[in-house]
Length: 97
Image 1 (cartoon, rainbow, N blue to C red):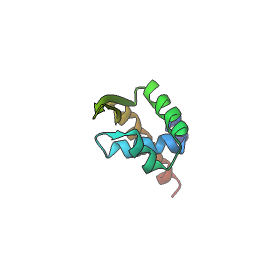
Image 2 (cartoon, one colour):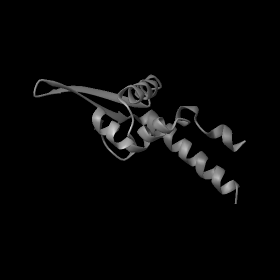
Image 3 (cartoon, rainbow, N blue to C red):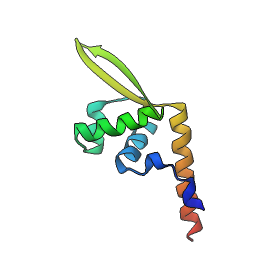
Image 4 (cartoon, rainbow, N blue to C red):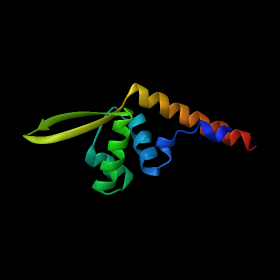
C-alpha cells in the first residue's frame, strides 16, 4: 500500500514543518523555527528532541555575546527520509487521479 511508504516521524504537522523549513535553510536557531511555525517553546522543543533522536536533525551550539545560541540543521539521513516521505505523498496523490 502506498500509505505504508509515509514516514511516521512526519505525521505531526510540527515535525513536518520543522523538516520543511530546515530543508530550505542551512541552519536556523530555535527562535526562528518558533516564529516560522508559530508554536510554543515546549511544543517545538519536544518535536525537535524526537527528530534529533532519529538523527534527522543536528544541533550546533555556540555563544553570541556570551549568550547561548542553538542552531538546527537537517542531516543527510534526515534529508533522505524527508525526500522519501515527500515522494510517497506525491505517489499517493498521483494514484488518486
